[in-house]
Image (cartoon, rainbow, N blue to C red):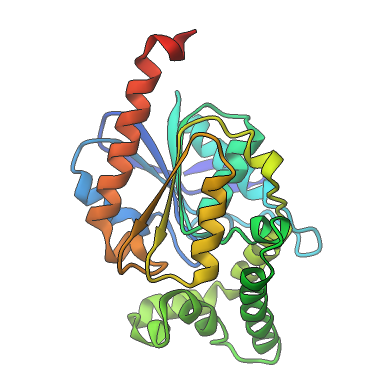
Length: 277
């Protein structure tokens, strides 16, 4: 645990080797990465945490002033605690926070992996109206439903990502946590919609970037992640066939392999003479 004046931040690590900091998504904690870490064995020093408002990490945001920078600041503390140049990996909203950390450029990153980020800003800036509206329709209906008293309104958001029946298929403990953290998730969406992601901004990311999307994810999610890749100069796009948004659980071994290959390539690039100039 990291203790700061603004609040506590989850922190845990295991293994040895290059440091990989893993950011989970909304309605989740660092435990979400266990299947991926298990697939690595002892290949990396895996650092896990939770975003603001989840797990043991305190909330720092003001509902009236949404800003992804609050989450980025907290995750920068995790990266500093890990020490050295780390490989930053984020899933879902954690992927969006990882992009914010990279754009702020206040900590030392060796590489970046973004998995299924809800990058609504890049769709808006790119005038991808059809795909942007797909996100908008989902979130508008979800927020209206929750405001109207449906405590399980978040089920619609989860089914948007995973397909009809996904929420109902989850174990009771996971469903209960998603319901409990719905107000936090609503803040996450405010942060996501308030995060500008222009081509000029993304072009500032020069470290190696791997963008991963699920081949069975909604087209709006797939297009948003493809655009992030297209607008970043040193980026590669990977599609996991048959995977939905929850790919880090359903396809953990394949995700682990993709991240490992990316990290090892970035490590080799850092050793090359060109990188040292």
